[in-house]
Amino acid sequence: MQKLIVILLFFIPTITFSQTDPFVNENKIYLPNIKTVLCYNNTKEQSLPVIQLNSSETIAFSFDDLLAGTKNYWYTIEHCTSDWQTSRISTIDYLQGFDSDRIIDYRYSSNTTRKYTHYELTLPNTQIQPKIGGNYILKVYLDGDKKLPVISQRFYIVDNQIAVAAEVTNSFQVADRNSKQKINFTLNHAIPIANPYQDLKAFVMQNFNSNTAQINTKPSFVRPNQLVYNDLSTNDFWGDNEFRKFDTRSLRFKGDNVKDIYRDNESVNVMLFHDAPRNNGAFANQYDENGNFFIRNTDGRDDKTEAEYMGILFTLNAPAPSANGDAYVVGRFNNYTLGKENKLLYDAGRKQFYANIMLKQGLYDYEYVWLNNETKTAESQPFEGSFFQTENSYQILVYYRRPGARWETLMGYTNLSNKAKERR
Image 1 (cartoon, rainbow, N blue to C red):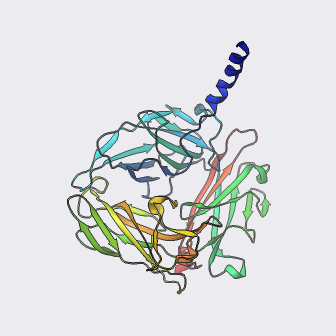
Image 2: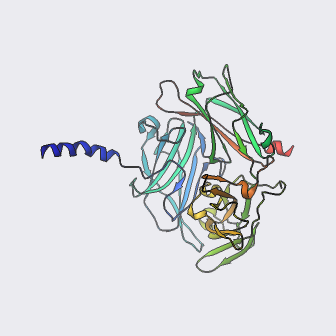
Image 3: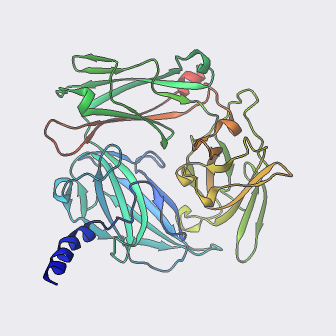
């Protein structure tokens, strides 16, 4: 009996520590009643949520609760590695003030068919203040219980010590010159970097889409106070196509790409014009927002609390690219994720995909992607095509771990596009 008790006592700590965190370190909504999560640098709406360390810049974060009423939402932030694993450091190392707080800034919707409550948060604030640069994950949970996840959201704080100079050019691969774009960049630094091959990483992503991120660990040239990344075979991105878009700023008039608007006392539904595939035609230049969306309501006075929630009917007239796969409609409005909410149903007889997604009134960019279930790869080219001329934005984030340091610091960031090249 004593041996059995000893064995049980030995295993109890192991069981306790093996409990998994219900949160994941990515942009995710855990409850179906939570909609329209926004997170950006306050200086520019829908910019990437990147701010400078110890500056006046702030992160604007907000979301809506379609159950309305008032909930007891709490939040905390955690420092992460460059690949979004939780850093194994104490909150004392990266936070000033408290490690959690309640969201107390909220407002009820007004003059809307669907009632909801709008919550807002600004970071840093008087309660929670990050004190080192790096990747951070914001975790929102219910009733002060971290086992009840609501939202996880990535944001970035730059301890700016590395300057990034970059350019967009054609792919160096002859077969891809008309369909891909290549990023070359140079890092200029005044701090000593003894081993850039081991201590420094640079991530490049397209249109704020983390699914496109490419990691750079080996500079092509190492010069005094300068690292050059222009290898022939790296940082190639599909040019894709300009995003499709629709305009529901007003529900009294039909905006861009809106075919019909149906509303009653219980709901609002918007039917878009049928979309056609664009993978066989020539490139058609049009203005887009690189996948972004903007909440707007020109029929009211307050976009945040007077904008309606609508069912948006998407229809794509196209045959299935292969026998084993699924189509999705994506954009920054759903963080380019492939989930059941944005999966399109397929009518083989009509060769038609369709989906109905609930979105808040405004301006939206979107595109269609095909997930090949055999290769597990998702591509927009089967529906959208890919062209070098497409205007895209690119983000470069540079992380450095000082010798002996226990965490990685985000020390460089830039955002660039090929718009100037395209317009010349």
